[in-house]
Image (cartoon, rainbow over all chains, first blue to last red):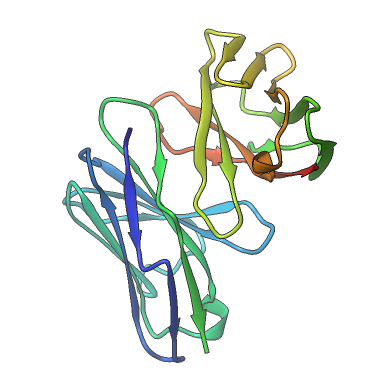
Length: 115
Length: 112
């Protein structure tokens, strides 16, 4: 089955620094990747949708300069949280979709803690 | 906007019982539905899906039922096991958008 690898699984960073999270599709080409944010005991909140080779489409209220998304290849998308602050602490999850199915495969998530 | 919602935020069952998790959706144009299981600290894991041209689909120990008349979706887990304890999300998509809308989630707690 389709596998999506997300790295790192946990990261602690100092306030003001930037953190990059990687999302890779291991055995399929991901034409579209999605980035979600999840607060404790809450549902997934879509942050942005990215298509390979084009700019990401951000959901309303998500700062594109704060959450930089790059989808440079069909197997890799990155989310960079720039100038992180404690309120950015959250669980970030990516998902990927190939072009031959409706299905979405999720990464294992990244727990970001900004101190 | 339209959204997917869940009736019960928490469901507690005894090991061996059957579990039923419900989901109401409001977008009548949705044509593809997915159930995900999310364990603590992990990403959602695909369980089963169903397209709108079907009303029932079975997997291993799980069954998804779709009632388009009342816009209701359910996930049935047979012989629930402690390992089934997790949060379950339903998600819907509308043809062509490919962007799933997630429901609120139901926490399933299985007591040994």
